[in-house]
Image (tube, rainbow, N blue to C red):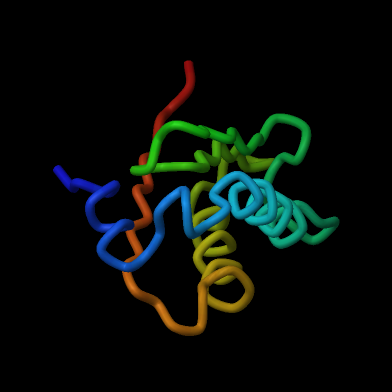
Length: 104
């Protein structure tokens, strides 16, 4: 679909010039602090953030669960956090792949 290694290199993000590991760790912590507080509609115990070190299409994957199965509230909360706390001020490229799955 997208050739992210090429896109990253085009903007100067190469392993020789950029510390991907520190960025992944830092953004993981930023996500945790933004999403998992006492006012969050997310189920903190069940939700998790997975670091995918060798996947430039998604270095981080969030598996988020709501406390009361209100996926609308969870998605609204996530998008609000993204826009107000997590998004870079100068966005070069932003792709959020959001998939809803019903658990049995």
